[in-house]
Length: 511
Ligand code: MSP
Image (cartoon, rainbow, N blue to C red; front, top):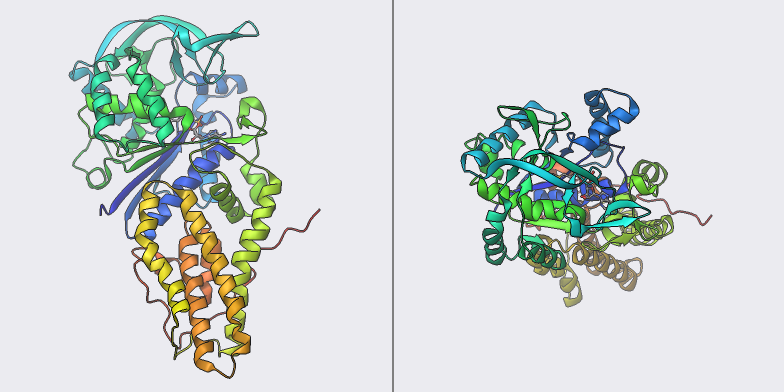
């Protein structure tokens, strides 16, 4: 098994403050990073901000502030959000940093050296909001305005000298690569979209602009700045100290295990990025996963649509872990998901307070009251006990495979079912009526505690603080559960103390 794992989020445009869509990409990436860490991997988890290009330059101009000051301020809100979301990112990269600039210019020189870049003229449509070029067939007219069909964003006509990347040359190698690496693009439906896009023919890509200045300069070409997507995508390399390919970080973590992105930016990651890398003779990432959108009333949540649910407001009202749990559970991963406060409250009440919180409270309180606050000694497992205990051990490899398929739905269902089974077991076995059969009583308590312990481990990637709060029952803390802990089944030692814990989740009362 490959023990190093490199996961990235998209780097966000600091053109406006972060919203729920951004929080979603980051939370799911953090989920995978945390799971891999408790399963014994060394993890590099990268996020950051994408600060160049006309979109940012205009946003700063509209506010009448210096562009870098503008970026500093909004980039900080993204960095702060990473903390608020309890992300375990290893690094936070900004494309305005020197390390990134050097990396992008080096990559440019590699492309140039290999004859993949030439000077010509671009005449065509450009969407500043998407920072993307569109062909005539990708444009429609709505309310007398030209818009990109795919995003509905306004486009403007560009006519200027530009360097081009020979994307057309990479059409066949890309198709061959997709064939040889069937898992490169996920989920499957998106892979098919990408393949038909490439099969329909790739045109060379304009990769420099002359009409504005906010970006990284093309080496030795004072008037050209590098196309913001070529600049932005390179962040995945800069954070590992590219071009120093002998650097330990680069050696340990490149190629990336997975780029986690929204489906809106799949073309950049699954077509342009691998083509740039092939041209520069750099190994390609192992996977690009395009998740769906968070919808608000059936529309993509975005600033321009004014339908934003603010993560900070939700966190202030309900707490972070409920939000993390809700997004991971309710948005079927890979598909779009409509979110609502009502469903969030349901989730808190039924899954978190009733199913998980209550189980932890009931069992720990029972042990404290009736078993001297200790993990019991003599036990005798019946088949029904072993069935429950072994379920997790027997499913561990399956869980790992599902995680490598990004099947979050399986993972969460496994947890919810385990919680139901554990609650049912405790109710049906009635330990309170077994006081004259100490071995049976001990066994029921042992099994219930062990299931709680395992579920807490599995919940850690989703609701880290609450899982750690619950693990106080066993006196376990975060450092006890990092690294290969899913393999270890010997946490419960007879005679060890069981502690009282605070309420994990408060139920939301009907308004
Ligand atoms: N800067 C580029 C990405 C460069 S990566 C080398 C960009 N930034 S963005 O801020 O506009 O959006 C980044 C990502 O935020 C999207 O790809 C997606 O992952 C996430 N989301 C933004 N709005 C979203 C929703 N409404 N729903 C879910 N995620 C969405 O594109």
